Amino acid sequence: MMGFMPTEETRTHESTTVRAQTRPDTPKTRGAGPRAWTTRLLVAGIVLAALNLRPAITSLGALLEEVRDGFGMSGSVAGLLTSVPPLCFAVFGVTAPRLARRFGTGAVVCAGMAAIATGLLVRPFTGGTAGFLTATALALMGIAVSNVLMPVVVKRHFPDRVGAMTGLYSMALALGTAAAAAVTVPLTDAVGGDWRSGLALWAALAVAAVLPWLPFVRERDAAPAERAPGERARGEAPGRAEASAAPAAAPALRITRSRTAWALAVFFGLQATVAYITMGWMPQIFRDAGVPADTAGLLLAVIMVMGVPLAFVIPRLAARLPHQGPIVLVVGASGLAGYAGLYFAPAAGAWAWVLLLGIANCAFPLALTLVGMRAGTGAGVAQLSAFAQSAGYLISIPGPLLVGVLYQHSGGWGLPIALMAGLMVPQTIVGVLAGRARTVEEEAAH
Image 1 (spheres, rainbow, N blue to C red):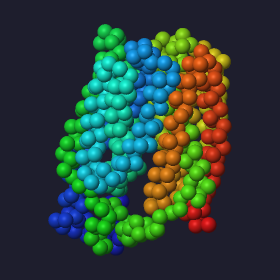
Image 2 (image 1 turned 120 degrees about the vertical axis):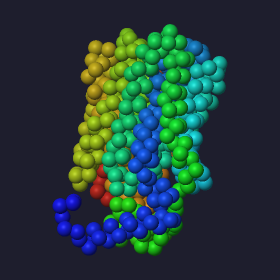
Image 3 (image 1 turned 180 degrees about the vertical axis):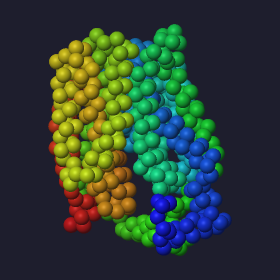
Image 4 (image 1 turned 90 degrees about the vertical axis):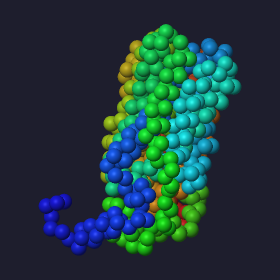
C-alpha cells in the first residue's frame, strides 16, 4: 500500500483519520480505536474469553461417569445435564444485546466471565444434583452472553481486521474445547483422583479471563446514530457509513416466510444437537467400549481440535462455490461413516472414527458461513443469525436428553449411536437446501 501514489480516496481517508483523532467525541476517545496497550489488553481478553466458552461442557463430558456416580444420577438425569447447554444458550443468549445496550459490552462480558468462574468453582461441591444443575446453568449463562457478544467486540474494536480477529477467536475457542476434553482426567489424577477438584480447576482459567475485561467495564457502546454525519469507522471505505446506516432504518424482514431461513435454522439445530451429544457423551461411549478414561478424553479432544484448521478452510472454500451443497454432503458422509464405525468397532478403530467425526463436527463453521452468505444486507444477516441460532438451539435441546434415555433403557450404545447417525440424514438434506444461491430478502419479499 505504501508504494502507491496517494489517491484522492487515500487523502480523504487520512484526513478523516486525523479528524477522528482530534475530535473529542469520536469513537476513538470512547474506546473504538484503543491505544496500543489497550489493544493488546483487548486481544488478550478476547482470547481468554474464547478459551472459556466450552470447558464447562467438555470437562464435564470427560468425567461424566464420576459425576453420575457421585450424585447418584440416572442415565435420564445425565441426559438432562447434557441438554442444559443448548437450553441456556437459547434462553440467555437472546438477552445479551439488551444487556449490552444497558450496561455496555465490556461490562457484560466481564460479568459473563465472573459467572463462568463462580459456576465452575461451586458446582462440584453443591452436594446434590439440583445444585449441580443450577451452578452449571450459571456458568452456561455467562458463556451464552459472552458467546453472542464476542463478534460484537471484534466488529466494534477491530473493524478493519474482522477476519483475522474472528480466526483468532475461533481458534482459541476450539483450543479451549479440546484442552478441557484432553487434560481434565490427567489433571484430576494429578490432584489425587478427586473429580470435584478436577472439575473446579477450570474456574482458574475463567478468573484469569475476568482481569483483562476490568478496564472495559465502564465503557459504553456507541449507537450508530451517534456517529457524526459523514464520519466513518476506522478502515471503513468512503460511502460505507451511509450504506451501513441504511439497513437500520429498513423495515424488519418477514424472516419466517423464507424457506432458506427455515432450512438454515434446522441445519443449525441438527448440527448443534450432534455437537452437544458428542461433547456430553462421546467419552462415555469410548469408556464403555473399554478405552481408558484419559484416552477417551483425548479422543474427544481430537474431534474438537480438528475445528481449528478446518474453521479457516471451510468458510473460504464455501465463499468460492456458487452452491455449498457439496461441502454439506462431505460433512454428512463423514458423519455417517464415523458413526457406522463407532457402532461396529468403537475401540478398535477409535482414532479413525474421531477423525471422521471431527470433519462432521465442522458443520458449525459452515452454518455460520451460510448465515453471512444467505442474506444480502447487514440487517438481514443480523435477523437471520438471531432466527437461525435461537430456533436452532431450541431444536437441539431434546437430543442429548433422548440419548440418555435410550442409553438407560436399552442398556447399551447401539440405539443412541443409530440416532446420531440418523440425524445426519435430515441435517444433510436441509443443509443442501440452505446452500442454494439465494437470499432471505428475496424470499421474504414474495
